[in-house]
Image 1 (cartoon, rainbow, N blue to C red):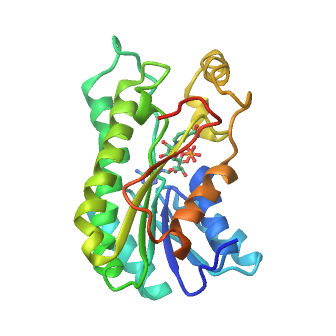
Image 2 (cartoon, helix red, strand yellow):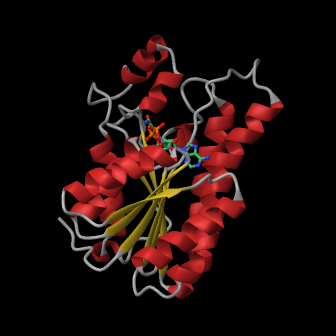
Length: 249
Ligand SMILES: NC(=O)c1ccc[n+]([C@@H]2O[C@H](COP(=O)([O-])OP(=O)(O)OC[C@H]3O[C@@H](n4cnc5c(N)ncnc54)[C@H](O)[C@@H]3O)[C@@H](O)[C@H]2O)c1
């Protein structure tokens, strides 16, 4: 679809789900990929699966809530793959706690992973991105970051709204380095994270999707791939909805 030959992508949360699908599609289009995840064993397995298909991929251990871990993972990936051109921030966790039941430590954990992780991974990759001819930061936000969420999970919605805000802020500050920064806002997608909701809550969400079904990780990966491409070189500061028509912002 797009030529990403010679590009290196660092994808967080890529052991499975949307992150893995994004890494796979970037690799199919020619990029070398670092599969970075807190689940290091699964990251290694997923990288091996891509290598078995003939792609260049490595697994990297990464906790996006820990800046020492981020520094080590980014440095290891850049050393092994020869720099970093594309960062995809897909690592994320869900909290489905209600407004009434949310506890402060759970609130903080969600912000730390989803929002802090996105920011500090981008920060750590900056020295490499500044050397790239067409650098890209692509942050996986969410429909909830646009509409406040259907299920009352305020910490999650706040973290994802924050991701859109820092996407726009970074787009502004980093344009002079020719780095584009965009967000993708998926609606409900068939991955493990949805198990954090009750089946009834998933059905409620499905009922407002105009296309009448959940999304697939590959459909989010395609949007990531477009934003990573040279063809998207004039697109920055965008929050791209991939939600089957559940919300039009
Ligand atoms: N699936 C959906 O419905 C949906 C909708 C909108 C947005 N999203 C967002 O998409 C992203 C990917 O979610 P997914 O659906 O693929 O879920 P997933 O649970 O399948 O994948 C998340 C990955 O992130 C990793 N991860 C979690 N905490 C981490 C940490 N501290 N450091 C590094 N890696 C960590 C997990 O190990 C896992 O591999 C998340 O940011 C999520 O919020 C998902």
